[in-house]
Image (tube, rainbow, N blue to C red):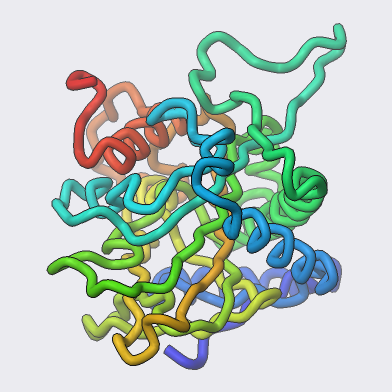
Length: 335
């Protein structure tokens, strides 16, 4: 998939007619392809270079040093996870060997409310937990936090276009994202001196769990592939500062599968390149507030649909998915 549809965020500031046209383009891309390039995002190239540089420095540290900021709990997606620590295909209830990657995660920055305390409701579960930062590299937290803010801004632009595409007010999603539980993840795929096990990949076949996933990554052997409409696994061209967006499970729920989740994986490098194939990628997983309902949006309700049962919340949906991913298929009742 060498040529992706491109959605230009500059359309939002170019007047209603241009914004409506771009919204129609986004809708077409999500219905027919499930992946598109985001342009006009205004993320500074220098910030992207700094992000990749400081994060590669972190992953080069010895495992014992990185373990000081290890993920605290299976459902608390913060900090570092080592090679082989999860099998992401289990999120689709598919068995697979452990993924050949390391990762580092951050969630929303702390929110201070009117009385000066942190916003952390009792029913928010693990989704507003503190971020965990290493002492080295010293500037990592600042760089990641600045980048996270840019991704949240890009996400807000995409959601405004989505609202237009659905015939909803442009600010329809604003109050569903004012306490967002979006996450930023660095994915490090090291060289592969040994051949993978049968069925083992850098990241197994999966869909992502939220609305959009925004990805930027190094162009290295063994990269992102999506299942295209013809049923073929197609490589996705990547480079630092180039952003692609994929549709996640929550949009499939919101749109009654009018937009379907994008099946994707990260392939292993060819054996001839396996010792020169380390690859770093960043994924911003866009998620609304933890208490937003994951049910069908008004434009997609069928006339004869029976009343739905109690809707799942965004936070519960996300937690259940991550438990299966990080515990190799175990569910909450088994923990």
